[in-house]
Image (cartoon, rainbow, N blue to C red; front, side, top):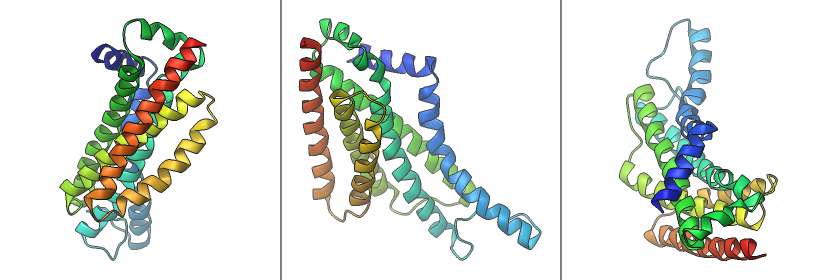
Length: 219
């Protein structure tokens, strides 16, 4: 698995997709707040700091809103990362060469963990950016982090399953739409049962992806 993770990391650096998948979610709160703050600067004639999502909100409320949006973006980028990282290898069936050295389940799990780690790294960076811009952090940050971990794992596994079904780029739309509903569901969760369900979905998707990888390489 370590070899697969290293391969995914090096490949992501080589084609610059890794940087994009991490940096874009981090820049989301900056982009969202810059437009609103710039508008306030133009209307009031002076700079405003801390930056805001809503001028009537406290820094904590602005941080909460920005944190919710950023968390959702990171989960969505996890599914994109999972779909994109090995898409070429699966499309050309060169992924079969990996299976001489590792099992299909190990390969699927490596892809899930890699994509989830990228989503989590983007989220951590995003929270740091929110703290700098708003001088506050979202409330209940630990619980939000647990939700993001569950969400990124489920999204990564779903993206891995989708790319093993078909590496056609158009398939990412279905994965994206599915993760939108999953993100809303996890975000609104009030108990651990929904997050446990997300982990269960991740396990099932990873197992199905491993089965489809083996069948794809066998035919």
